[in-house]
Length: 394
Image: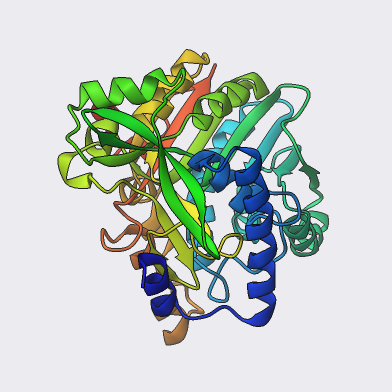
C-alpha cells in the first residue's frame, strides 16, 4: 500500500457525487500530464486541482467553508473578527472621498456581513463594496446572502471576475487568499534544488522530480542563503509577486490587509521544517498529501511574509505593519468588543468566549495566522499594530 492509500483510508471515502467529481478532475489533470510529456510541474497540478474552470476545488460548486465544509475561517467563528477589522478599515474609508472596499475571495460572505454591519454602526460605510470571486457558485451564494444586507444599509455591492480596470481609493482585503496560490515545490538532491512534478501512477498520481529550475533564480537563492541540506523539501510562491504588483496597480490610495498563516523567511526555511509547508484540508481533517482527492480537497502552502513584503515594496507599496492575529485583534479592542452585553444569556456568553479563544489562542489561530498591512499614500500608524509590530523580523 503506498502512502496515498494510507492517507485515504484515514480520511474516509468521499460520497458518490464527490468521487465522480474528483474522477473528472483527475481525468483533466491526466490530459495535462500527457500534454506536458509525462510530468507536470507541481504548481500547474495545484492550479488545475484548485482552479480548473468548472472543475477545480474553488471553481466548482461544493460546500467548503464552515462546519459542513472542509475548514473554518476566522469570520465563520462569529462577528468579532469583522467587528475588529471595521475599527481599522473604517477610519481609512472615512478619510477618502469615494472609498471602496475590495475583498478577495469572499468565501461564504461571512466577513462581508460582519464588516458591513460594523461599519454601518460606525457610520463609516464605503461608497461601494466589491468582491473579486472566480467561482460562479460562490458568487451566487454570496449574492443571496449579501444583497439583503446591502439593501438594508443602502450599499452597492459589485462582483468582479478580475482586477478592477480603474485604480481605487480604499481598502483591499485578502483573508486566507495567498495560501491557496499555486506554489513551486522543490527538493535538494545531489546538492542542488530540483522542482517537484506530478506523474501518472496507475489510477492515481505520484511525485516526480524535474532537474531544471529554468529561470527560477529565487529558489536557487533560497537554497544558497539558508544552506539547505540534502533531502530538504519546501515551497516558493512565484505567483505572490505578480499578485502584489496587480494590487499596487489597483490601489491609487489606501491600505491592503493580508491575513493568512505563514512565517518570515528565516522561520519558513528552518532546518526542522524540512518537509515543507504543504497542507491539505478535507472534511476538517488536515494532512499533507496533495495528490489524492483532486478537486475535492483544499491544497494550501504557508505564506512567506518576507517574500510578500519584498514584492510589495518592489511594486511601490509601503509595509505598514506585520504581527500575529492575536496581537492584531487585541490591539483593535477584541476583548472590549467581546464583553458581555446586557441581553446576553449564558449560551451566548459561552459562544463568544469560544469565538475569542479560536481567534487568539496560540493553539488555535492566534499565532499561526499573521496580519500584514501595505499602504499607498496612507496615514500611519494603523491601530492593529500598536501592541506588537514584528516588521523587523521580515
